[in-house]
Image (cartoon, rainbow, N blue to C red):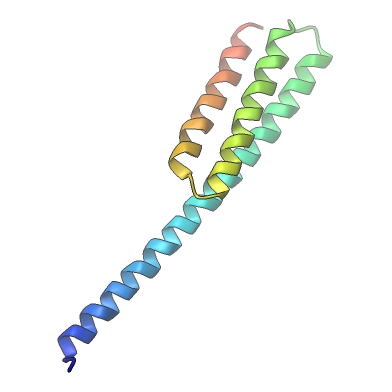
Length: 102
């Protein structure tokens, strides 16, 4: 037979599991949304720099950084949020490095 203490522990474990699922869902959406936003920003910057008088390396760096951020968005949506975070950082660094060549 169950007593009240075991029922309370089961309820607390269930609540903790639901909170963990909510945190994971928010992390997936944050990674996917940030990746999509950085992808759009990188592609827009690549198009603007390609239309201007910037060296060819600059729009290529923005496009490469945008591709890395797009991959991060996909990984984040699939639940690989740690890898997505590192790819977002790497993609942003590639874009920033490409901007230094201008």
